[in-house]
Image (cartoon, rainbow, N blue to C red):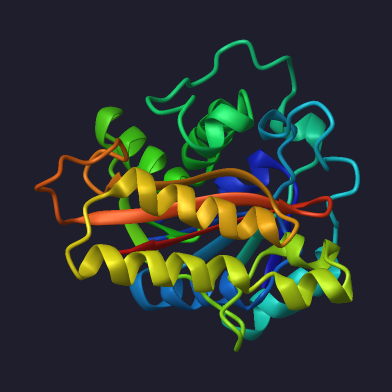
Length: 273
């Protein structure tokens, strides 16, 4: 496996490649990220993973400075599943000049975007830059970041990028907690409480699947249940899978999304129903 830090070397290494598979990450990898690399290896070669903590997607007061940087351990995990190239640029390589051209996607102010201004603009911009650097045939993203995946799929369509977007199901711990690099911030007591988010989403999805259509009531009940156990809830929302907007009463392809803080840690999750 090659560890590459410069765009010039990356492009030289990928010259002539037409079937590469790409996994963009911010590092501090867990089993979910490793699963994305495995999926990439089943679809294309060479497999390229990027590791870059992108400042554009962090807002004021968020955890950019303390986000864990674990490059050596990350490279070992990726090498073990057959990744061919790890692209780990520094800040000056990715943003050699101030990024004055940015991508502002639809839905940037919805759901997580309403609570993290500028986040999805930062995500879309860095991913478009990475796509231009790697020029992959396939790109793999997890469904845990459901809104992010929805936005990036729209970006690929609207910019006519010749990239096949591959979706990976959310990897979970045995107790249901969605794997996340930020789970490491949780105290022991918070980690014991954290699976409640998924349990409530699953219960809400069962009600919707059984025919319940009081979406506002379902959202409110889940929000109140989390708040009673010390969560600071950003949102619980029933949305259309097709648009990520509030669904019509007769719509059946739905997803329930949630974001809430447990102590200082913001957790997100979703379940399709």
